[in-house]
Length: 324
Ligand code: PSU
Ligand code: MN
Image 1 (cartoon, rainbow, N blue to C red):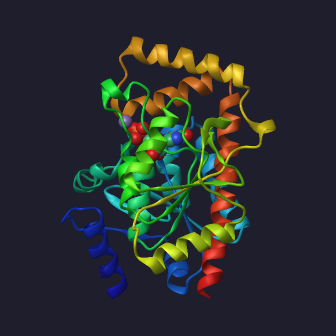
Image 2: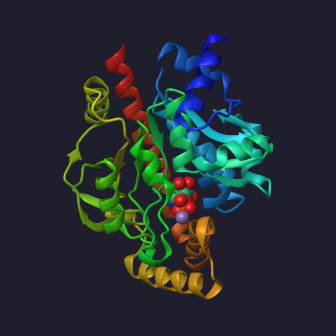
């Protein structure tokens, strides 16, 4: 099948490896891509490592339904028994949401995980790389990874940032969590040439909080304007990196700022006390928020993801309409 072969070769090039990935499209996603219907990529790390069981599976299905309700086809991306899937079916989604040893896969992990037949959830970095290779230009997630506090000592900066520097995709998110250093993350995005636009705002959102404390240069008012930016980027051919579309929660839906600040301080202290480092940091802090706020942060987290899924779908619909 020439289509499949092309996808595999493109993957190998984009992922910077000579591995032939067994990339498989879900049937609905394959059809949609063939006829130019709007498709939205979704990540699986939030499902396997970001949200607690059993809410994670229910939310994963709700995210997909939200994309459908807005007129696009959801393509949740993950790895099942070493096979990269673009558009997990319900059994595969269930597996990644419930099985215990699902690996957290960034881009650098994909080849080894494929070779060893692992089950894995893809981060923003890995999902972006796979989605772009599959021809998907819009991706919805909760929060972007970024520069961690104390990165000056720990060097902990998410590969989400460097991957977006070379991956042409619009990532709809609610900024970065306050567990990260928002200012440093924005500086790195600038250096790396990743565009950042606020959706109906000029303030960079702080995930659980509407306002993360930093100004943005650009704001867009409609899904059509984001679609226009993606089209212009393609026409100019001057920039092949990603675009962060920062979509804040309305202030009346954010986490109570006092509860937030308290929980964050506790979480950071626990992190130090327990010596948690590396890729375990983000899941640890998320789990701390969910238990310490007795579910309040979980409800906010779910709202964020569903709102981003809706906006991403409307951007994908607007992009498809331009091409029709
Ligand atoms: N933000 C969230 N929930 C998450 C993540 C980010 O609100 O689960 C996940 C995403 O998959 C993101 C990853 O790509 O955490 C970043 O991890 P790290 O900091 O280890 O790069
Ligand atoms: Mn990290």
